[in-house]
Length: 176
Image (spheres, rainbow, N blue to C red):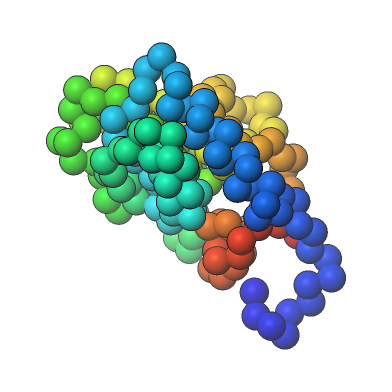
C-alpha cells in the first residue's frame, strides 16, 4: 500500500506482539508432537515471513529443520480458478522424511492440497500443515494440523500476505 492510499478502513487484526507470542506457542506444540518434522517446506510467496519466524521459534525449542522451498501460485492474471501453477516443486530430499508444510493462510485449501500432493508424490513419509491463519471455509474438506490464528472470510494482508502486490513487510496481520 502506498503512503497516499486511504488507510482509514483497515484494522489490525493481530499485532506483532500477539503474533510473536502465538508463533512461540505453536513452535513449542510442533517441537513436542509425537511425529517431529525433519524438513520445513514453506510455500512461497505468502508463507515466507511466518515460516522464518516459525523456524526460528522451532530452533529455540530444540528443533532445527532443513528447508525445502515450494513455490506455487493459485491466482493472478490469466489463471484458471482452482488451478495451481507449480513454479518450484520439492526435490528428492523430502523422500522418507517428515515434512512441516508451512503456508500463510488456509482458505479454500487448493494451494496447500497441491503442495501436500507434490510432497507425497516425492515420497515424503508424513506431511503436517502449519499456517499463520485459518479462515473459516465450509467448503474446505481438511484443516491445518497447526494454526496460529482463526479468522473470518475477510481479506487479510501483512505479515507476508500481500495487498495488490504490496504490504507483505507489515509486522502485523490486517483486514481491509
